[in-house]
Image 1 (tube, rainbow, N blue to C red):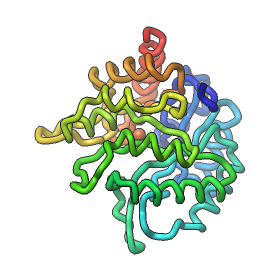
Image 2 (cartoon, helix red, strand yellow):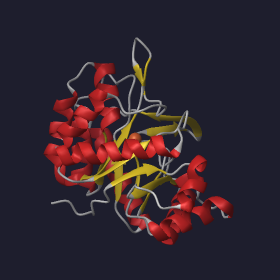
Image 3 (tube, rainbow, N blue to C red):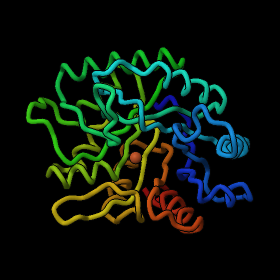
Image 4 (tube, protein in one colour):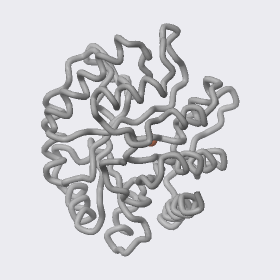
Length: 272
Ligand SMILES: [Fe+2]
């Protein structure tokens, strides 16, 4: 049994929709926000977030934790994240199972890890340190990948499951990322979804990607495709009712289009 609440069906809160969301009411159940956009900042964004938080559950989703890096954990970043979390009281805090830089350089990308026992021990120790620092457990998300390490000894789904088990953290299962990586690397996405420990999944991400011909690119710039809806149905049958979230970050549509995607997630889950 999962240890976090099912928040229903939400969308990522983006600046373009601040006005519409504050006007209320909406038909979405909850919002996810990018932590870094609100950390250590006052002003309108934080004011909007606090208003939204009065009416909806909110989750904090970060992009800069760099849990897989060999650089020391950024204590200042963690302090600011803790401060935001203490203020917002989110349903949970999440980031990505990846690294984003090394030697102080930020690659501004979510880069894949080698899936080895050594990397596993490294990541688990860092997740434990982060959870200790924040005073709360976190969820880690599988990322879209375009290359892999020849030295990997475990499939990604086993690595993800082991991190969650050993560090006692949650999983943010991005179904679109599973699909993008499956096509790019030629594995069966259902095999991935079937191997994810259902009781660790706190949340699902759904998003659109771009077909570049030679590979799929995780762009969050369009509607969720039929294949990903099919995989969401498959995942829901296995995992049960966990919070879903539509991510749309480029070519952001009007509110009604975004809300309709969330309502579709609700319908697909009900059907499943
Ligand atoms: Fe995602």
